[in-house]
Image (cartoon, rainbow, N blue to C red):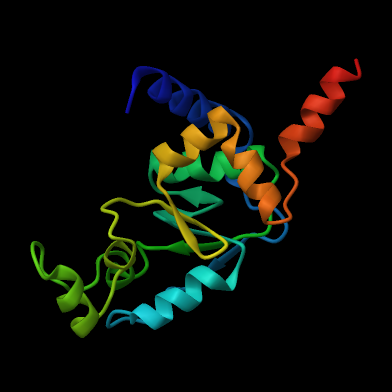
Length: 175
């Protein structure tokens, strides 16, 4: 992570902890169980990521993230006023997180045979993972970068979600 990205992430984390860290669950945020053990199929994961406009796979829950990167993703969504999203705690089900496929070549084929984890599905090695309208966006670093450069406002707009930051900017401009 670059220096400015690290500083911004640290500032977001400090802001989140100081702003009532326990009450992060807004109306519409749904935490969901992983759907049982034994690994998931690609079709099951497809259904999960496409079920809601915004889907996050994280460590912990939005109201109690279990890692700083998951917390940063929750805070970014909160800053934008995104309240209606599905959140899946990968710590509840290791198979949802990792799947059973062995590392190395042929991992996706083996994962498809034995059970997919979200890391296999996205071919992305880290958690949290963010999906917008069924499409994989990335993890904390990507979402933070999108937040900083304004791309997240545009992507949310495509989903019919108005970023709260637009209203905040409008309020500041009128003063």
